Length: 386
Image (tube, rainbow, N blue to C red; front, side):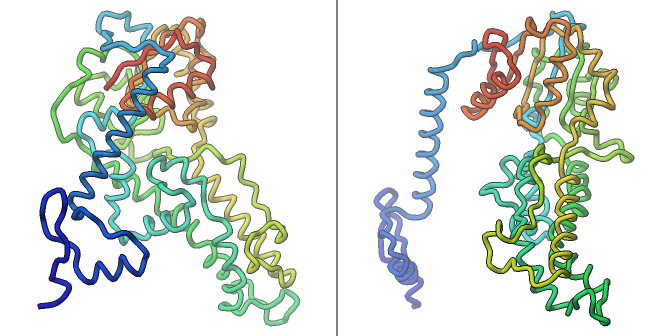
């Protein structure tokens, strides 16, 4: 019998035997302590400790809560002309739609070229947690550092050389910047394909008493489940980032950090010693690569100002809104401009009442940051749990 099949330890929690000779050698090599629990019990214990940590954090947040919390809200009897609902991805999730960015990641599979590129070149520990904002954290230097190598591979001559080839020059740039081209080309296609596949996995209507179907709606989702589940008329819904049924318009997705991405090509500012400028051709190649990086940041940015400008009539229609109900929206910074425009167009914004749904301690923290940034007073906001 192989030593790999002989178990050396017994779990102190479930009495199961575990830990092979190979595992012991690995632990010893890495300087790790010998485990007392089997893998299954370790994972359960880890989950329990994380659950305990989250509960403690939530209790602390609730103990210091500056907003009034209500058990439930009733909007059916409110004047529908004065109510605006803002719907985020949490709405789809609570109706069994697998619509988180983790689901988007999984839909592509482990070997998908776009997924591999994103996970290799986006400098975020968990890029899928806030995927849109993560797009702003491209590892520029990881690509720029390869330019000299690609110049050698394509044998790019100096521009004054009779054998200089513009084709070789641009092939070197494209090879170095290939991650940006992959993301720019493949993300819209992969994202729309995934969005088109989404559907609810349950028939529950947990917001039946909350949704006033005669009110106005801003839907940040690309799906039509407000219409199909709650029978909200399409004419009452502003699909602010596009809708999947309209094949002729792009689905808007992206980060908010476009203004902070000036591409600095001064080699003295680079961390890597490999980013050396051998000659003018090298410098020009870096400049061309820098231009492409600029294209990337522009292409992957969510141009909220353009959306607002193109829909001024819609935003003007919110001038008499007295109650805003936010359901399942993360209140991410990238979407602040839309909320600011709603407030700016309102005739009595200081009297607006905000009912905002929450699910976790992180949600409450985001609500707090949102209120401070937009100048909404604590007394204007009431929270309800979903």
